[in-house]
Amino acid sequence: MNDLPGKPASASRTTLSHIMTHNDTNLLGTVHGGVIMKLVDDAAGAVAGRHSGGPAVTASMDEMLFLEPVRVGDLVHVRAQCNWTGRSSMEIGVRVLAERWNESTPAGHVGTAYLVFAAVDENGKPRPVPPVIPENERDRRRHQEAQIRRTHRLARRRAIKELRERRAADGMDQQSETV
Ligand SMILES: CC(C)(COP(=O)(O)OP(=O)(O)OC[C@H]1O[C@@H](n2cnc3c(N)ncnc32)[C@H](O)[C@@H]1OP(=O)(O)O)[C@@H](O)C(=O)NCCC(=O)NCCS
Image (cartoon, rainbow, N blue to C red; front, top):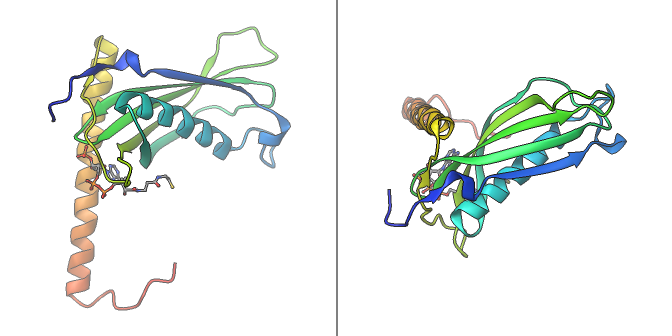
């Protein structure tokens, strides 16, 4: 992808841990999904910055899965690692675990997300990132799955762009969009 030396996935792997409080709840009394998404973005951003050695911005977030509710008092661990790198973009995989405050059971898997970050220079323009080096079979599986997601993201963007161009050429989208 570029001439930068590769970096192992373990070099930027990051875990953020946070105890959930009453400030984090929704109307049902469980933790608001947006609170978890903020932690996910924070952990992924830390990985992207570490891997790329500088600033990086969130380009997209997809497949944010909420598997189990998180409750007040739970200790949430947000584990993130760089799964895949392109020229200037990185897919960061995030796994969310919760230790229940009132149970002596191992932390359970409560969420998963995949984010794409772009490394940027001082002008906010994309800059090259070091290729990530998968170090074990799990890293290699994550790398292969990330490549599949990348292919699908690009195909979806291209298909939607082509549809919009066709509709515009046929005069079907004349009104200016207000929402
Ligand atoms: C992300 C951003 C830097 C991309 O800039 P751009 O001029 O479109 O540059 P490019 O088209 O060359 O994209 C750069 C890389 O990001 C990837 N990318 C851009 N948009 C993407 C998207 N929506 N989903 C996935 N990947 C994306 C491109 O595939 C490319 O990857 P590659 O270099 O590894 O091949 C730019 O759109 C931006 O600054 N967005 C705002 C980011 C931000 O503020 N985030 C905080 C949330 S509000």
